[in-house]
Structure formats: C-alpha cells, structure tokens
Length: 428
Image 1 (spheres, one colour):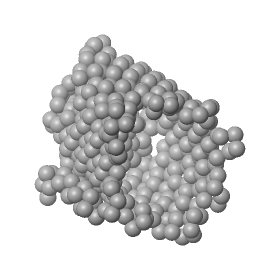
Image 2 (spheres, helix red, strand yellow):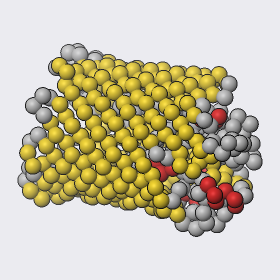
Image 3 (cartoon, one colour):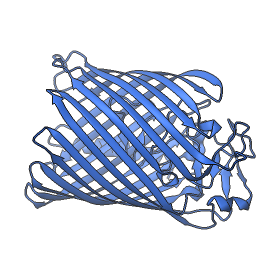
Image 4 (cartoon, one colour):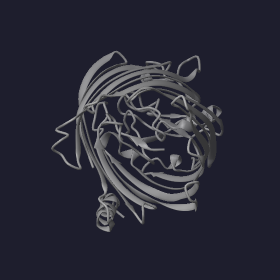
C-alpha cells in the first residue's frame, strides 16, 4: 500500500462518517501562522511557520458509538524542509454496564505521518486499541481504569519499531468548595525491535558524522508545532529531529551506555495529579504535577528533536528519561465569550543513558548523561468573530505567545525560543 493510499483511508472514513449520521457531525478547522524567533548554539534565527488542521467526529446509536477522522499539515522551526502531513482516524463504542453508573469503552485508531526531506527517515505508521472502564459511584466522583496497546513502525528506523502496553487507574472528585481533584497512575512497557549492533542516523545538520543525529543508548498523541487553540492533539503521534542523512555504525562499546543487541523492553511508572479551583464565575486556577520514573531496559536510540518539540510521547521518548513537570494555569472567560489563558511550567528531565554532547559535536569528556531543564510561559486568547451571524458554527481569532527556555548540559539541546501565533479556529 502506498503512502497516498494510507493517507486516503482517514479521508474515506471522514466521508463515510458524515454519511452515517442522523445528527450533524462535530467539525473543527484551524489555520495559523507563527513567527518564531530562537537562539541556539550562538545562532539567532527567526522563521515563519504554518499549521493547518481539520477533524470530524460523528456519534451514532444514541451516542454509544463514535467515529472520527482528522488531518494536519505543519512545520517546525529548524533549518531545512520540516513539513509534516499527518492523517488519522478511529472509533469507539460504549457498552453500558450499569445505567448512569458504569460503562466500558473500547475502540482503536490508526495514524500515518509523512515528513519533509529533513526527516523522511522518521515517517511513521501507527495503530492502537484500547479498553477503559468508567465507574461513577456518585455524581461528584468517578473512577477509570484501562489498557492500551500501541504498535508503531518507522520507515527507516527499524530498531525503534515497537509494541507498547499501557495500563492506568485514575480518579476524579468534585468538592463542595468548587475544587476538582484528579489523580492518575500509569504503568507502561515498550518492546523495541532493537539492533544487532548499535546503529545511529547521522545528522547532516548540527552534528558531525562521527557523533550522530540519533544519540545511542536511550531513548501518546501528536502535538503540532505551533498549535491552534488548545493545541490540536491527536493520539499515536510523532515529533521532529535535527536532521537525517545516511546510516552508519558506532563502536559496540556503547553497549556500556545501554545499547544491547536484539529486542529490548523498557518500562515506566507515571504519577499525575491535578487540583483545579473555581475562583469566580468563569474563572479558574489549576495546578498539574507529573512525575515519571523509568526502569528496565533503555531504548536503542533517542532522536534529537527540533526547537520547541519535547515531551511529545514518541520521538522524545518518555521511556528514555525520568521527568518531573509542574504547571500552573489561569483561565478566565469574559461575558462576551472572549477567553484568556496564562500558563507557566517547569520541567526537569534527566535522561537515563543518553550521553550529552559538547559544543564540538562529540560526547562530553566527563561522560555526563543528558539533563534538560525547561521553563515555559504561554499567554493565549480566543476572540469570537461575529458570534451572532455564524449560526451553528463558531469562528474565533486565536492569538498566542510562547516563551521557552530550554537549558541542558547537551550543547545541542540548549536554546531560547519566542513565538507569536495568530490563527482562526472554526467549529460546529
């Protein structure tokens, strides 16, 4: 099956979905343009980026069943052709176990992503299946538990092909004080195909051929590069890298850093908590905290990601690093439906077995493993356009500013980025 045929499948699903329905489908469209100014390795650059996204979702059988399809086209801020086209589709079914109390949700999805010349080696095809149980013992509390199975295949990075198992348990409680508490625990295991000898993909951009654009010894959704509105997130996604060229080999002594021959299984444990407080009418403040611990084997390689791309769940492989992330979000919706959101976040991420690079493109002489510390600030607003004239459709002007300070002991992961995004979001 050709890439075009794979990309046509979600489009076909979209057409079938629209034809099925007795009710109107949910449709979302977005287009955005960003000016991204960034400094990395002593180089100051600026670049315009574009993101286009479209999705459709249809409920049927009294909303027990849902099907959806979507497509995204976007770029990243790194030299070269970093265009990416993604198409995805899926569906789910709700099995009622106890009316208004318990239900089982089961379904799956598929994704095809094709990239520009700078990262065609990262083309990915993915599929997943899941089953979740939701129980609502009372109106103010709910429990969920579930299992997911993901399989992902890369066109030219066979050692990173993998099957991933994920299980989670979460709970939600709404308190009389208008406080919402959420807690979740996740266990994951990812089995990589692996290699007979340590393999890397050489970067023809930042790193010399002797160093490699994929760092040996380590490594659910895709987030677009600039994001419109809430950011446009789709499962089973991918991120970027600093550039791919031909393949080569590195000395087998790198096995001391975690590269082993044959299949390897990496594992992780993640704990997540959220406290959201309603401060007044249409005003809220939320604190989210996540901690991730990895153990077992390490991924055969980890791909260097471009400016502003991290923690995407795939190329910035969560099985490669421990992490602690905290973010504080303030949101207010005005009476005229204009909303404003301010988010600040801090991420601390030590990699288990990924050597840090010095500025000459070679591993640091002290043998230090890579350790990233990321500070983020985001201010976003959404302004309705002619709300009294659009009927069932909503049209909003989206303006967002992002500041990212990505500190690292790896010279090629050290940068500061400032981006302003302006776009339109259309929905029904």
